[in-house]
Image 1 (cartoon, rainbow, N blue to C red):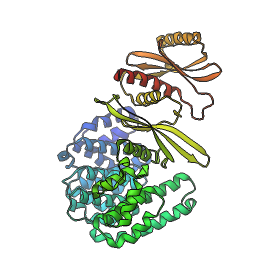
Image 2 (tube, one colour):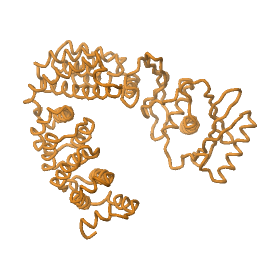
Image 3 (spheres, rainbow, N blue to C red):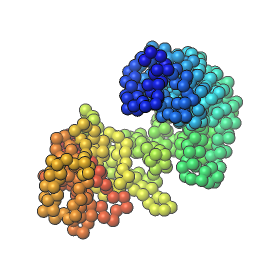
Image 4 (tube, one colour):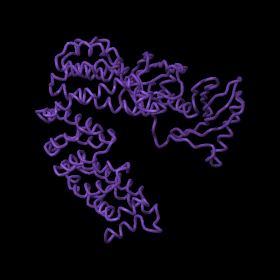
Length: 509
């Protein structure tokens, strides 16, 4: 391409082949930084028509910039033109969902001029999504040795923006806790943090009393709650690390809120400020699975391990806490379970691990107004639970379900019945006939599963007046009735059990 106008014409011009354009962008993933900058300059010079007609191209280019910089050694990333990034950020529409990736690019480059620009933009024109802010700042947590003075104290002016405040405070806390700064960078802002903590505590008290006032749907209320909790955690930690005794009354009020994470953070802050009330509550919270890991981290940091009951420091207790925290995530159940019970613990070989690994299988229960909910979850090789109810599975089968779910290999795949070729249809017909000879009726093939050179038919069927799912490879048969179950196993679930059986049997015999 001889100049920028030719390049942009190639990418978005009339009659351009979208596949060819996308292929060109893809080819730049390993390109030097100056090649990406050339495209970005083209973008700035042609921004208005691109925003109007091809906003997807902007998203693609910003993701290209991000992924390219992440692959580059830091000395190459540092060559990024910060003025170019700032100009593009200031001219892109604020509603563009990927605009924040330009700030992330500045943090990845993390030269003094990049960090100065980043601090300025976070103060003057920051994203209003606290999760995006967290991603923007993540490279500064992952790397040491960057020029802290390029960011601070200017970036502290962004604390007034609640969407940004938590990320900035977390960064300042991290720098101090890791020893990268000898003096906490928020010392001179402590007078601002105490009323902020008070306002957050008051807001959460209102959310607990009348959640409907903060949103028409549970999702809206949870968003308000998540943002407030994330910020109050950051504020508590900062006040404790700075050592602000004047914050003790507000921290005690925070410790009275019902949310376990806030109780833990407030108790940890009070314990750091040598308040017996906080130490006592921190010790008590070790009994709560959803708080336990954080409590143990504080206890280790503050030299309080001997005060924590030994039963809460075992590997099984830590695993129980991992599952409770995973279940409490917004993408899962959003709240910790009412009860968790350890069903099994064993050391076994597991796909993806060279050595045997501790595997913990738990049953968890929820008691909701609309009814109870129970299932099994695993901790060790992963933390996971299924949507389908697997509480009726024997322990070995439950482990098999998780192992099959996690299994990844180029020779493990499925082909749906609608995509079978002639040979695959003949193989399926043979399996259907053999299943019928074994007493199955109304066999309805779902897919053929291919597993390391072998294949099996996965089908819906009925037998003895029960409807269910079967997997059959000519020798081994897996059959699970699904009739009458609220959250029955799917064909994919049973296929995973079949694979997991073979994997764990091979690895552990």
